[in-house]
Image: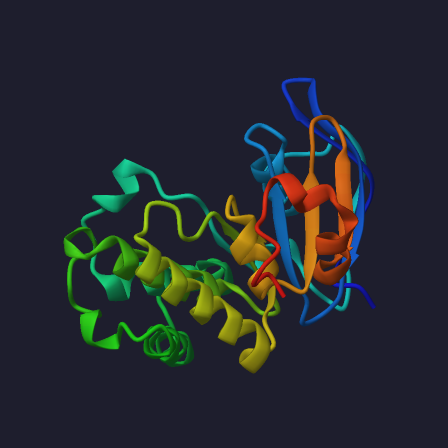
Length: 237
């Protein structure tokens, strides 16, 4: 059963259409990268999946027992968020808020989950540090650990390497790849870097102006010709 299915979805806001006729489904363990030009609706699509905005038309459904509140989410980080005055541990733990309901405290199991995810992101030694004192790469690891605390089967990542230098960006891509292949987390990621998208992802959704241009396996995407203007084919396998 598909974890996520979009059928004849029209994306937009304030009644304005951004992209029409979005159709795709992803299974458990998939790694989907969403690419396209600025303003093509990539972030709107992600917010629609999360039910933060409603589709103008069409249907977004989850399967295999997945609920939208059980999807981990790493949004694009703003300048204000980078200066947030909380400890690493507090921020990562806040990813468990959907699990607590009306309970005003974290359980031992939730604290253990936060610790496990900090260890997985190699930031456990930073747990008592103030978030705003960390480097950009360290902050992204903190936010990814937080998203993992919320996730049960799937994480959505909106430009997770934006603003990072090439070395740190590659390390982040490798972390996400291992989460997918070793931990079985289904990944849906927006990226402006199509070369890296086809390096790591299994499937590609390319959104163009007003309509999707491609959805399918990355090998078919590279061969389709759609990507020719955006990627260097050499090394893209």
